[in-house]
Length: 334
Ligand SMILES: C[S@@+](CC[C@H](N)C(=O)[O-])C[C@H]1O[C@@H](n2cnc3c(N)ncnc32)[C@H](O)[C@@H]1O
Image 1 (tube, rainbow, N blue to C red):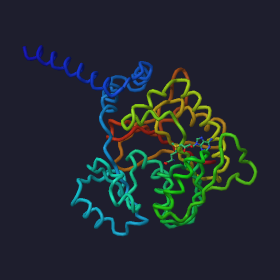
Image 2 (cartoon, rainbow, N blue to C red):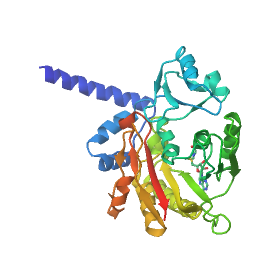
Image 3 (cartoon, helix red, strand yellow):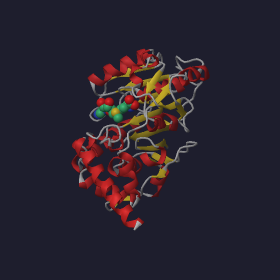
Image 4 (tube, protein in one colour):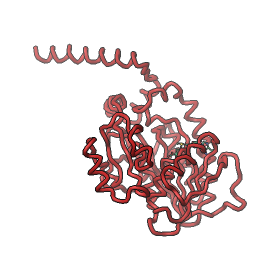
């Protein structure tokens, strides 16, 4: 009797859920669901359920401006409920519905950034005291550039590059508001340009936060799935391979390149890293970030063998840390 009732209730919940998604124009392409199943097996249900939950708001304290973070958090705690992001000591989940309206945001004291997006700069292990020369290959609007500048305490130098003039405007704005002083901005299209003259082997560290199909951001905006398709994924994968080739060329021997995307598509992740390892002088390094739940990169997809080293890459699924989805790989130039 009870189990029958539970089944009926479950059925009703399913109908209500699908009505709710229909009302919000949330349509999950069947091909997307099939790929999620292939990637995650039964956990794909958990994944899709999690994707439908609204994303927790997260803020990063800009330590270039906030000189006493403990006091700052204590003050914020009087107005909001804050919860520390377990793997980043300067970021907090916040129960404000619109942190973009907080005065601290206008003063450049907080940056609104999903917790998963904090990971690539952390994985780069930047030196807070040193003189590192860093290239941010796809930088705009500057979430990670401003985060890297704060980790580097405004020391060393970051060359922040982006191919989009419009997005570079937002990058300039953010550098200004967040008090960043160690950044030079360039507007190179890394897919088309040749980096062999002048730019070759220049940088100690490179972040390539690639343009991608954004599957991992569905919790923020379901519209990404209206543009989604395997053709787009394949197109982006070609673009990412061209950009990473140039980025690797710009890296010094023994230098580190962190590659990241906010998508889960293997063609745009392990597929790009496997291509880099096979064609250039780089090897994959293991990433460990304390208090972050990660899954290994995959070694095979649709008959393509990516190699065992891909296990050193990390996949961050929304259900694991209650964040967006992300992929991060770390390469060392040999
Ligand atoms: C994922 S977004 C970068 C987000 C940024 N790293 C941040 O944290 O704010 C990818 C960026 O790559 C840039 N991009 C796309 N194609 C490019 C290319 N061929 N060369 C350089 N940048 C490119 C896009 O304009 C976009 O701003």
